[in-house]
Every structure is written in C-alpha cells, then in structure tokens.
Length: 559
Image (cartoon, rainbow, N blue to C red; front, top):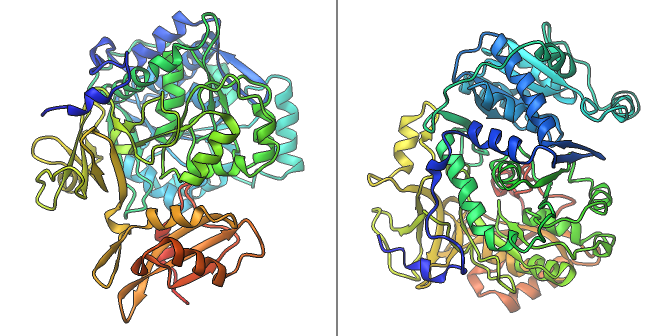
C-alpha cells in the first residue's frame, strides 16, 4: 500500500519503527531501571519514587506473586487509581511473567465480577477504598490471592496521616471483609525475603487484557501482546521525538498523568513512554478535584500534558489555571474523545501551546494517528498515521473509498491487538482478511493523509433520510459562550424517524432554550438543528471523561 501520508510527516520523524529491539516489556522496563536509576520515575501527593526504587519494589512484589504458585501467563487484576502502587504493581506483574487485567476502581460489583470472571484472573490488587466491591464478588471468581493497598502505603511518614484522613476523617473506606487478603506493605515485606525467578517472556505473550469501555455492548478484553504495546511506545516516542529533543540537556522530561493508568491511553503515553525516555510522571489520583489538581501542577515544570477534552475544559474554567507557569510546556496530546475547537482555541490562548489531537482505541494499544507536534493551531483532524501504521477508509463491503468520502476507519500496524479475549466471533467481525482492524468510527481522509472523524456508526442520527453527525452539532453548540458541556443524541420522532436532542450543562445560568435554538438556527442547516433541548446539572461520563451518549439515548425520552 502506498503510504502517501509520509510526505506530510514532520522532519526527523522516522517512517518506520523497529519494535524488535526489545524481547518484551520486561526488557524495556529493566533497561530503564538501569539506565535512569537515580532519576525520579513517578511523583504523587508530594512523594517521589526513583527508577531504582521502582526496580526494587517491583522485584519484591514479582517474587511474592511467583511464590503464590501462579503459572506463567496467569491473569492478575489491578484495581487502583493513579497512586504510586500502580507502577509498582504493573512492573511486578510483567516481570513475574503474568498478564495484567486493568480494572476501573469505580466499577460496580456486577461490572467487576464480569471482568474478573471473563479474564479468569487469579489475583487482585485493590485499593482499600474499593475493597468492599471486591468483597462482594471475589468468591464467585477464580481469584485466590488479594493484595489490599492503602492511599498512604508509599508516602513515607506522611502516609500515616493520609491514611488517617482517608479512613477516619473523610470516611472514604467502606467496611470490607476479604479473608486471606494481604496488605500491600506486608506483601512487600514478605517479598523482600524472596528471589525473583527470571521468566522467559516473549514478544507474542499477552501483556495486557485491556477491556473496552462497554459502550458498544458487553465489555470485551482486547488481547495486547508485549510486541504490540512495545510498538506503540516506540511509535509515540518517534512521533514526539523532535519535540522531546527541545528539552535542554540534563533536564528530565516531565509528564502530567491525570488520566487513569488503568486506561490504555495513559498507560502507554504516560507510564510506559515515560519509563522509556527516562521521564517523570506526576500522578494525579483525582483529576476531578480541579482545585487540588491545579495546586499540584504549580510545583512542577511540565513538558507533556496528555488529556481529554473534558479535562482541558475543566481546567480552563478555573481562573487559577491561567496563573500557572507554562514556559516548560511543549506538547499537549488530546485523545480519548473529540477535542472541541472552542476548548482547543481557549487552551492555546491560555497556555500558548496547541492541543495536538490524536486518535486511538484499546484495540490498538492505543494510538493510531496524531497531528504533527509543530502545528501552530488546532486542526480539527486526528492527524496522520503514526510510523509503521496504515489507515484505510472502507465502505460497507470493505472496499477502499475515494478521498473525501465517508467510510469506516480501518487500521493495520504492529500495535493492533490479536483479537478479543476468548471471543473469536467478535474478533472476526472487526478484522479484515488482510489484517486491518475495523474501528467502527466513520471518517474521511484527504489527499495529504489527514483524517477527520465524522462519528461512530452507532451515534449517527438519521433525520428524514439525512445523516446528522453529533460531533458536528456538539462543536457548534460548544462555541456558544453560555454552554459548558453538551451531548447530542438522536431520539425517536414520528415525523422524521429521528430528531436531534441536546443535553446541555450551562456556563451562564441565564441561558434558555429559545436563545440556544436561535443560535443553532444561525449555525446549522434545518435537519441538523435540535428539536429538543434539555438542561442538566451534569452529563454522564466514563472515568476517562468521555461523555456517554448511549446512557442519554437509552433514557426514557421526554421533550
């Protein structure tokens, strides 16, 4: 296939990456531990951890896991927010030769049981704040070993105070009972007396079962091998390389890691890329606490700031954010959901750095495309395919469509998953005979190789035979100064089949339906205009900040 988009690459970005330089993610981790031993790898709540400390603690935990009798390839679930225990557990599970099952700590008991059962996890690492959920379900799963972490475990003397506040002042730890569970600190103490046995892990062994968000039905585990995740780490390094090269010699790259590490975006672009380039990740356990988040940012000279649209928007709407020093900021990768132009424009005005929008999925480890890092303003596209990546836009019969024509985005590259865990039927639905993964997203590609997302297949609204794409409507409405957040969905309509409905969170309390309708009349052609507008205090979101249109669509609709 002619990779015509390579002509649009930034200078010094390679066309291909060599993922064979690492035997496994363990190889990548242990190289980083040796190379950057004295550097800080992570910081959280005022406490930092060096690469050497991460090496030592993860080796202890890996040895402890091996001592439990788990066989190579066993699944270990990690149910932690962005705290220092996460990178320790991640490195430990990989070094011990096991597979990580990332779990959202805010899962309900039903959701957790599904994931533990589906993955066949035999061990679970969970923060005590969420142990009550685990207590409800582990007895119905294959989980035999549970490690319970506390917020203050790795925070030194300060940790005692943190644990007291979390448990006794804020009452954030509901009662739980998990017979046989071991506390994280106790586990590390036991591991100190054990020896980590080297494991021969190969590139094709499974590193992560990364469960999709479940917004398209039953949550499925994307099978990501060591090779696939290594490839995406190196693809991202290649893409950001010219920008990272601007960091003065002797200065360490500093990442903000506010997106949850159990999500593949933060896992690859923050945690693993950070380790590969010797960077430090500032972990933010609760990015919803915007005030606390901004205060934390004030203590660091951040270079790389990956986020999603809702997080960028939330920061911009706090006046203290604009008071921060952005002189070290080099690149702000935006992903996870469509970045809205009004948010991108304001971010550029406040920070001086444009949002570099990209695109990816759990199934692609995750990054597929990104805009060039040397752009001067927001482009509205998802950019170009990363090195060693191919994109096609396909019609309903899997044939490639001409430039400028809508079709399903399909991806081929070393970062594409093996398939869905124990679901060959679901895998067959999304993979073409020649190895392209069909994303379910509708896009158009231009002659330079830039792709623009139009929407997901399922989100498209059909109004009297005309296609309405929610992203377009939402972007228009977000530009209204009285709107804080918006979601656009299709609702049944006896006249047109479907009608457009907006759910709006106000920025200006005086905003009313008539004003917004008049604005939409100016900005949108007839069939795209909302027939219904409903004001809400909040909109339902995933923990990555992606607005859940499905939940709004599934509600009993009223005008």
